[in-house]
Length: 524
Ligand code: HEM
Image (cartoon, rainbow, N blue to C red; front, top):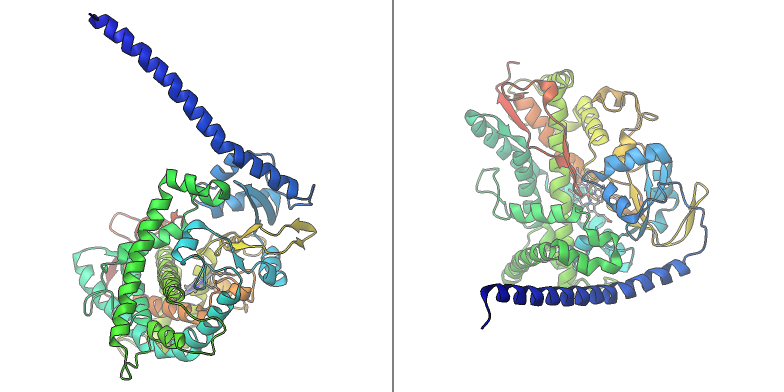
């Protein structure tokens, strides 16, 4: 008979033995798993030419250290490092050679001089999956598909004619936003972050699908708001697997990134499928709608296309339009209002320009045709883009051919970031760069359409945002109306200068906490 004590020691012995066995099995498995990776790494290193003249950067740091340096706000960390190492910096992020350009001169080298070698996109995991494996436009490598998508979008989706065609949509939606703010302000401070996101969701939905996301006349959260927010969050996330391509799958499985990306992709795909299905059912000679889905479905029938447009191509393009069109402008509007409310002098000057320019009560809303009459509005928008470009590092690019920049070797396969946030805050270009001062643009001709490398909110070169005109129209129209219609103050107990500017990192950098402001009837 085994006594109680014996049972304990017996089972202890067994658990010790099985622990040792488990540990041994685990170690063997780990070695088996790591061995091919080590071999692959060594083989890759052997293929690299010895001693290339790389741009300066923090060498010798362990790769994990480099990865951790990314922290939550990479654009700020990159700026600190660039201040120490120079405007063209080389880092090894995980397994990836990476360069970061942080001056107008080095940005020009990447986006103009060597544009043809840098106009491919880096294969970031979430972007690849959500673009149906690199279809569509924004996340596609430089290939025939991307060239065709770009050409079609410039001619069919973002032409001046089409942008003008949707003018009434933008104006109606801004009017709906005004009514929503009027109702909401009776209840307390207005959540402008939410309001601008809903506005952009509605505008994008109407342009892309032809229907509103919120209920009639409202500017409110739609059913698929969370889905869009999750997609955008995933696209901006630097997942661990992105920096260790050979370990991509296990790392992303371990961190849960894979499951999150799959969930989001499946949800979006279901949504797009049902939209396309309903269009196919309604298709007929009487269907003369001109939203982006209808345009793309018509193009699909065009036999002269170099590369046939598949259903996945269309879904990927729709995804680009949705992600590209929503958060960028919404974030810009929030930053613009944040800076204006912090800087009462600029807010007053803009209000004066808008109110005197249109006359009190003469027109209930500012229309797009009025916008050219407001030079200070233009300066405010430029200053907002300088201090808060929503896409702080642009969309990551990949170098496809070896080249030499500023005497340094850059190898094919190197990932490239242009730190447009750092360029906008560079004291060598801008006086008092952390101060919101729209007047700095009064006498210069610096613009943001990709010709001036000091100010690059839309990028530049072959990959420049194809919807610059559309984006700036939305931002100017909404800002002009919101600022003209109401006087804005921080909630009781908060001083103007204490309205925070803390950032939340993502592909698009948003204000971390929602912008809550009190809207008052103007005293005129
Ligand atoms: C304030 C508004 C906007 C800003 C600041 C902005 C910014 C940008 C930036 C920085 C890029 C990457 C450029 C590069 O890599 O050099 C980009 C690309 C893109 N944007 Fe925009 N964008 C805005 C509005 C829009 C809108 C309204 C749409 C569509 C409805 C759109 C669609 C796209 C697409 C499809 C691309 C990918 C182009 C390509 O890779 O060839 N954007 N945008």
